Image 1 (tube, rainbow, N blue to C red):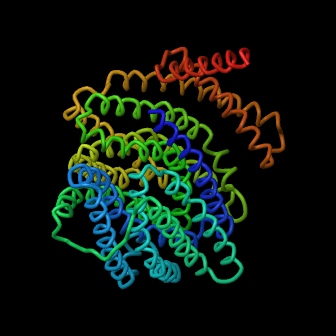
Image 2: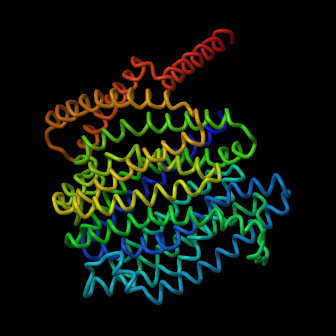
Image 3: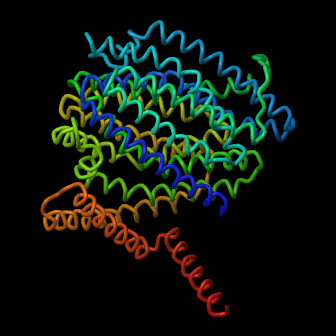
Length: 521
């Protein structure tokens, strides 16, 4: 587990850097174009290839890793590489077909993603989408190459890709503001191609070799298809949630897609830093353990990873709800993004944050089922969740507007997580459920205490500082978060949460070891 912890920690640091550049990108976009029809058109066009192909690519990548290990163990290294090349070429063909269809039917697709777009905004979004279709091929191939690198134990390259990607887009957004708005969508394509080139070079260094080989009748491809269909449906319905939310948001007026997107970016920042990295590092290991009859270690890995997400995400969720306004103000409020936009975005962020922990655990549970080669359970639960999300969207948008869309996402995520826990218990009878429930309750109590303290500290510090410039806002927020973190850790220690207690004992032993070594030297 030391290797897993080290890889996870390294990936977290890389992801934080990458996400910081991502926020700079979003801040520059909304600062340059505000919450407007232009930013709405750009965000919508960017989402289309992601939803169209990311669904297939994610399903391919998810089934690719456990199948690769199976083929390598049973048929040898050469056949596993042959399988990888076959998948790579099939993805190229699928990507070209989807990109062509997306180009031909760009306008009706835009109408699905944003039902209220019309006139110049519809024309702009359609043209953006046609250009984005070029990047379709590289989105799919990037997913396969990321899976290959993860199999080989390289998590750093896939994690660092967001840095050059965001830097390139930032550069082109700035250029577009001074010349032609279409330049920023061209920059997005270039950024995606750069990601592909970086991963391809890294993959070749780790043994990947490309050659022209396509065999749709290969038995392993048939196995992959049988596994991938439920994953495709499961991932697809999750992407459908995104489409429905954005489309309904377009009915609330110009800029509402940008508002929801900005709030979702802040909410997913936590998931990408902690949850996604934990899941990314653990998934190859879980896939390997599930094929080696390591049931005890498999159950321990499930318990530890779920507890890690609970301990990390619950306090962040509470903090994001309490400090939503200052967080949005610091990150986005400048240029064309005004105070009214801040309030709307903060409201959406608070509603998204309610389901933050459930969303993280759900992502992990999906991978656990996939590692067990059970792709149907996530599909069924995902479908139920989408139906629930649609119903809640329609009901809540009438009473809460954009907040209703965000809250519906949170409630449906909580429901899906509960359903998946129930189903996991049927397959893995004992994965430390009792310990997980206790950890959850203790984390909730410690987080509520932390939240009360954070609210008081932020109110006092912001009142005493007076003129709230950006630096003063950062200082006030930083003080609140630091004190809140101390209160939360002390709360977990008092409540005797095993992971924190073990971490504390480990730290004490390390300090004693260093002190002993220093004295003896």
